[in-house]
Length: 165
Image (cartoon, rainbow, N blue to C red; front, top):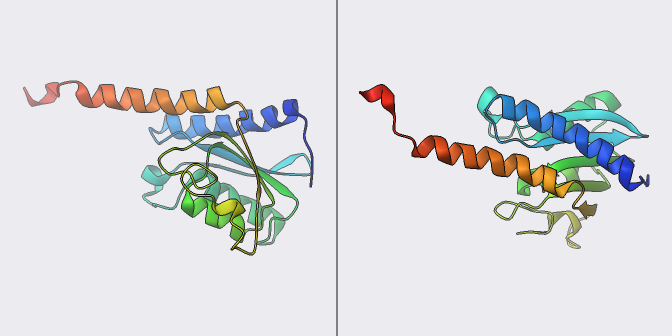
C-alpha cells in the first residue's frame, strides 16, 4: 500500500475540497472526492444529486465510476480514496465492492457516517473486504465548508419570502 506524507495527504485532500467547491457552486451539499493511484488522481467526484436528479450521485460514486473507466477495471486495487466527509453506508459499500484498500477522509459525519461514526462498514470483520481508514486530514477545512453550507441554508429558510407580497 502506498504511504503518503502528511503534506502529500493534504495536497490530495485539497483536490477533494476543490471538488466540494463544485458542488457548493451548484448549491449541492459540498462533498468532494478524489481517487489516487501511483501519486496521480484517476477519479474525481462531487455531490451532484440535485443537478442530475439521481439519489446515488454522491462524490465517492462519481469518483469510483471515473476511476473504473480510467483503469478499465471494476477493481481499484492499489488506490487511495480521499473524501472531505466520512462516507455514508451506500458509499462505504461501493468502496468495499470496488476493492479500494484505503480511505482518508477529512471530517466525521455524525448523522450518516459508515466509517466509524454510526457504522463501521469499512472495517467490519464479517465482510470479505476491509479498508484501512484514516480520519482528520484537513478536518477543520472539510467541516467548515459543510457547516457554512448548512448555516446559510438555515438562514435562507428563516428569511421571510418577500415574493408573496
